[in-house]
Length: 87
Image (cartoon, rainbow, N blue to C red; front, side, top):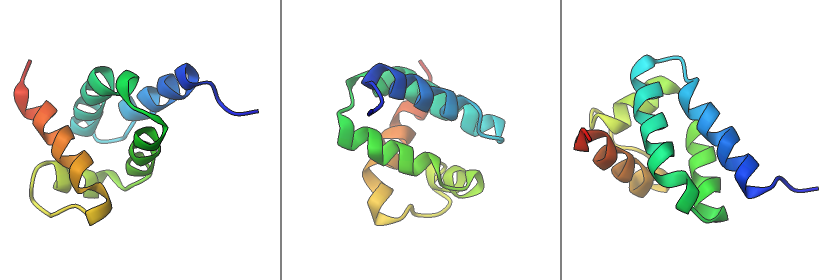
């Protein structure tokens, strides 16, 4: 049995907010709240793969210290845009 979309979104949101680095908790939770509900299955797969990455790497990618791998460039750019809005 496959996971229902609403359950997957809830699970990914929880994974976004329990990272280990508080800054990443804040950034990824904000992003999850604003974007997950509108994502299709492929986009959710990409976000889930990103959540499997190391927090130290994610933080460097989002803050522009290090370029993200090509597979995550678009997603990291979107996350950075959301994080920088300050709304």
